[in-house]
Length: 200
Image 1 (cartoon, rainbow, N blue to C red):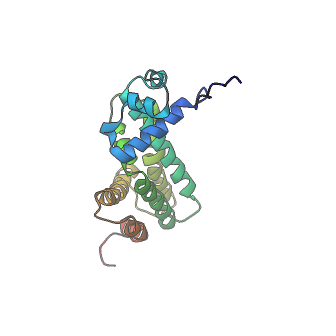
Image 2: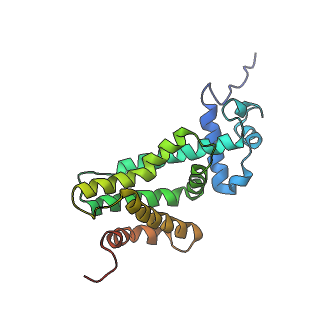
Image 3: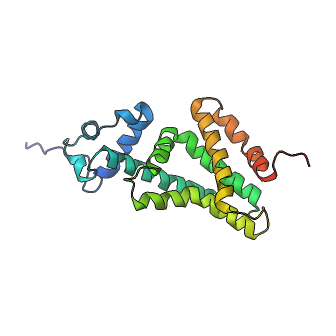
């Protein structure tokens, strides 16, 4: 009886996705320094030269990982957003979505912010950043039009909002705040952002 050769685990076009999935697992478990195209090739069962068809080097792999992260974050924010809501519950839902992503993807989020400033990052990356970080700015600009918050530069207001959210994400990553406590406090955080700390 003739034994048929075992089928390759990846069909044409699947290898890139498989390499990104393996790279994200390595990033999560061992950190960015452990990422290697040669090791990823071994892990997914292809020749060491095969990843070169999709990523010219490690930097290209890191950019692709970050871009995939931004795409997933944009999807999470889009799913959470309801433009019909008043600003406070709308921003609370978006903040919860952002922090949930940060909790589930701490290492990836760190990479995403590092790649954002890479001069070699593509235009695609700039667009992806605009779809995520920029989406909160658009929400604030929309609230200004509806008279829900003060006038002013939406970019500047977004800086305050983004700094607060990313600061909480940093506290979680450092172990200073549990994910449960962070998610429980989202409503209060957004309330204080919108109403300030002065007694009224």
